[in-house]
Image 1 (cartoon, rainbow, N blue to C red):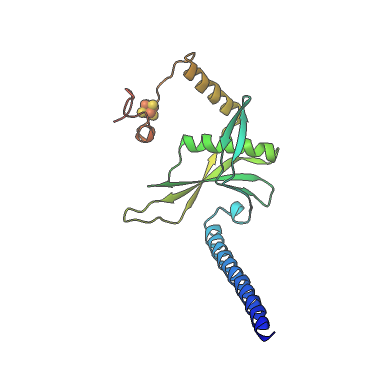
Image 2: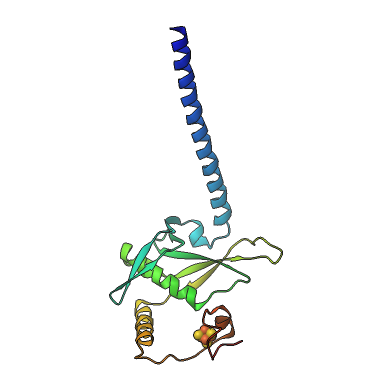
Length: 193
Ligand code: SF4
């Protein structure tokens, strides 16, 4: 009887220890998240600093000219005023944004429009993380960019389809910065080298 009681007490203590271990792990995770969130919020534009995170790295789809295009916003916030604002993180060597950011975020905004009709902001923020030369990164900077309208995105889509099927001739309007990041650079006769 006595040994049975010892076994029962041992099992109860083991379970209690496991529960405490899991709870303390969760608390540490929660503290880390809170610390991160407080630090991050202090660097955000005012409207984001007080906003609520509503989407984080979620696979969504934007409908463009009847086709479904997969998007995955890094973060989307709802501001106190009720605007739905997209945020996309990029790691770069300087604080800069590109047309490709705008196109990517415009597609994300179209996907959010399906979920929050009439509430999506016509702008978003590129959260630029600067890679330091000696290693590591600097705190992020939020750069506001104006997004493209649905009409402009659809025009871009049809142009792309036309170039792919040969009905539209591509034109060249290169920039040194665009060429430097372009995957066609090695074979493109118009590339800035
Ligand atoms: S390398 Fe060619 S395709 Fe790429 S951005 Fe430059 S001009 Fe355009």
